[in-house]
Image (cartoon, rainbow, N blue to C red; front, side, top):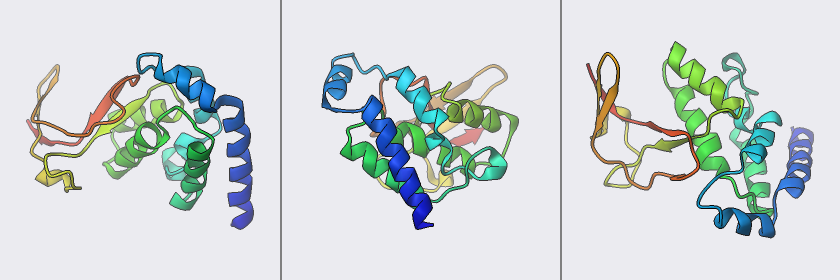
Amino acid sequence: QQEDLDAIQASAVSLLRSIGGPARVRALCGAAGELDREAWQRIAEVGWLAMLVPEDAGGLGLSLRHAAVVAEEAGRLLLGEPLIAAGFLPVLALCALPATAASRDLLSRILGGDLIAGLAWQEDDGGVTAPAQHHVRADIGDDAVVLDGCKRWVTPTQGVDGWLVWSNAEQ
């Protein structure tokens, strides 16, 4: 297992040195919150977005320890993209849901780097609550879902294609 972790770390360092660094992060900060889609695609191609997804769901089936190695290097070498907020959290949330055609499609698009999503899960108390305790309500209609309520501390706020919102559904 340590050999696997060392190989993942070396691979992460190599990729991050090619796409990371202080100058790039400064340029991204001046780009009105846009994410570098080319860098995100490379992150998807090396499998970082699929690390925590079970193999039977199209992922690599690795552990949090493997993801932590990548996250540590992403911080150390200044990756400008929100790896945890848009890479790890949304896929973990989707994997926790019952598998439906919609959730499988979203997961596939995120893992492929074609869709960048954030996760809106915290409410007023700032803590972690079970989905049944969420105050945000989703009214599911024939053509649309209407959300009623407020989520706090949603990240990333810019550069994503949309957000997965934890809520209680009403039909």
